[in-house]
Length: 267
Image (cartoon, rainbow, N blue to C red):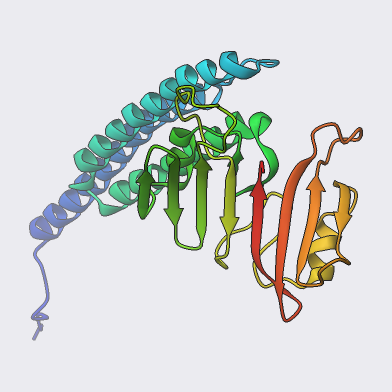
C-alpha cells in the first residue's frame, strides 16, 4: 500500500511552479539592472552639477553676479536631477519598494548640496565670525537661500530685518550718514544677534559656553579685546587674517559667566 502526502504535487505541477519562480527571479534581476543603469546616468549628471564653481579671485559686484549666475545654474541642475530621480523611483517602485527608497535617499541630499554650495560661494564676502555659513557681507537673498525663510520679516524706510528663532539679522538704514540724500538699495544686514542655542558660528561658538571656552575658540583670531571694563560685556575686534587688516566688531554678553548673546555688527 502506498500513501500520498496531502501536499504532494504531481511532477508537471511542481515543474510549473519552479518555472514561475525562476521567471519571476529573472524578471526581478532584469528590472534591477535597468534601474541601476538609469540611476547611474542620473548620478553622472549629479557629478557634473557638483563641479559647478565660482571662478577664483572675484570680488564685489563681479562676485555677486557670479554667485547669482552660477548659483541658479547649480540649483536648476539639482532640480532637474530631483525630478528625474522622482520619476525613476515611481517607475521601478511598483516592482520593488527598494528602488523607490534608493531614489528618495539620494533626493534628500540635493537640497543640502545646494546649501553647502551657497555657503562656499559667499564665504569670501563675510566680515566677522559667520553663523551657520552666513553673516555680514551676504545679500538678503543669500541668507534666505541658506537659512530658509525667516519666521518674520520687517521693512521700513530706515530698517530691514530677518528674524529666525534665536537669530536676528538687521540693517539700520539711516544713521545720519546720508545727510538727507536718497538711501541706496538695501544690500544686506550690517549686524546679527545670536541668542538661540541651536546655532554655531564658524569658529564653533555657541550660546551657553563659558567665557574661557569662547576665548579659546577665538585665540589668534582677534586684533583686540576688552574683557575687563565690564565682566558681563566683552568687546572684541575679530579678524583671523595674519595682518588683522579687516577687523570687525563683535560683542559677547555673559550671564552668570556663560554666553547669552553674541552680536556681530558694523557699528
